Length: 453
Image (cartoon, rainbow, N blue to C red; front, top):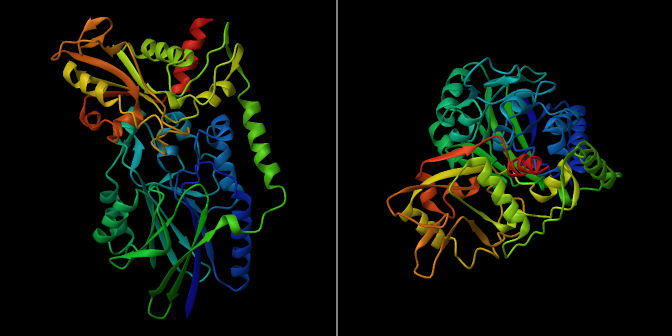
């Protein structure tokens, strides 16, 4: 007997729900049709379903996303870095308490205390014909961030290799939910050929027909819910072998529009806005934002950062401010509009010589117009790089807090965590640093705003 099994999969939605209803309507319809044919089906999500730049996600701290997954009848999910390191320990610990699906993440556990009840290293699905599908999963290795949040994270390929060996004799088919990125997926395929399919995400890659590496099928469906993946498997019950693996992707934009899509999105936005309308502080004046100049808002934010971190100086790009700060009563919604990014503050220790190099690098005249994507940034353009409490004088000397920098002395620079990943300032990647988690930029501005009352 040849059994046909279907697995639909989504990844990196990032709380982009524009196509959510038509996507889920399509999946539901397809699953019902396959059920009539006697062909079992499953639905997976590969992480980064939530993104706190979305008003609804922010207001519900991801619980709204979990409910959407419940409503869509997902079978198994794993977590991405947006679930893992943009929520506090307590928020992630309770995120899936009411989930009707399995959450499979083999490489994280609390540093202290017991595991949440939903956290599983693997699960085994079974079709009505008795075929057993082992599902393992892992998330990306943001070790420093997880440690600050009281989670221990293990090197994912090592864990997945162990889980694959453990399940190999227990299941007929073995698949992996990977929020690791394409390079890690390829390495995993070469290291663990007993995995039949690696469902890929994190790097937002798109494989319209999958990619085969060492006889392991890799998938990837881009980002933001633009595509849905559909994997078709055929299992031969006579030989107990998987004889077919075929991947296709569905472009959700060209699916039929569902009645009420606009209303669905509006309701999510309205609900989020309502939940975030709590007054948090008062302002006696407005603070304008600028993307290519210093502004009243950037100065206020610099004061907040320096006050919070006690650093010697601060640096950030003006493009982080998406709105101005109005005069009067300020709510969480107002602050979220200004700073929607899931970005944290980081303090880096640099010698005077290194700090001077950073200042000179920051004068790059191409950065202000850069259309920045990713790294936690949720704005449009990079904007001017702003430096506070350090600048160059006419003698080309770096001045910090009105004193000439001593080249061998160490200074503390408060900046954005997105600059520590090596793209803009390579030296930051290896410098001594402290991340301030779980607070986002907006939380630091809120804390300072309350002090001004």
